[in-house]
Length: 361
Ligand code: XIL
Image (cartoon, rainbow, N blue to C red; front, side):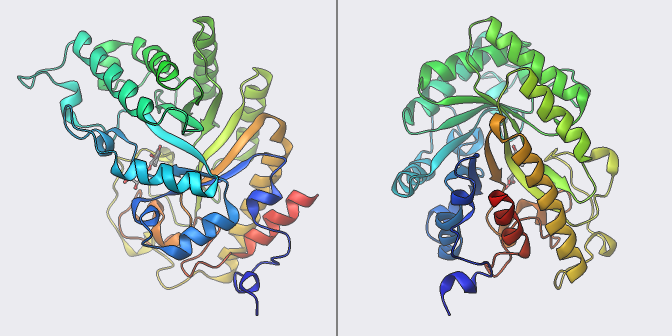
């Protein structure tokens, strides 16, 4: 039996990346252990199916710049080498975010709130140093992540409190300076909501008006079986297209577990609901009926992506297999979720064959 059959899909048609070669890049988030070779089967899947990778955590501020003046470039450097060896388009994630950013960034020497001048200087130093180090090696940077609330207002992060809207423009300016050849993105969740989508379209227009480049908007895509309504998602893909803003799906996963509070669906990483049995219905395996629903949901999503492919540049999954997906721990810690296309045994799920078939239509 050949290896490709072992993977559970036809095998003679190549992986996802080849199937969608003419449409968009197909990527996955990769973690530090995988990059270090700790999970060779995950790497094999990545080589077979993906032509783009995003570090799941290692280029976030707290990892790459944990203390003032101290940069930890080891994991990033190893990823750059791996991406070069495999010809993967490497995505930098992320330069400015209110999460996974150490407290010291927003404080002065006495532990008081940093002045605008100090924070501006830190932002500049961080971006020029990190994006500068990987100049010419990064396909595109998520310059800013999750700037807006769902209603389209500016998130009152410490960035915003101290610098106001200016921090966003500065971030794009510094990123462009640090690595002129990298694409520059804005990334967020719940962009299927009209209010948030409009805020992002306005932001892109404001950037362009100031002569700052932005190449695409990333829809994170942490979804469930019943949310978002694909009509809403299509509304936003269409609105972006009309506004001449290329789109990408940057962190796709489809949770099969109940979301504890429907009002908080999205991707706020600070959520942490208590683990209860009813919130973890499939600890020992996925019922076939649920597998079918996952396949159906992926098919509907990829039909939509195909429809908008002339304005979409990439579809990236947030992880390679179910055993290391962050959704096992978010928004409830310690669950068993099944959101990706490859299972815990590194086998392709039935959805893979269906998604491959769609590419041929
Ligand atoms: C997640 C990672 O997957 C986790 O390992 C980490 O503990 C928290 O962050 N939106 C983003 C990603 O932009 O960076 C987040 O990644 C998921 C939500």
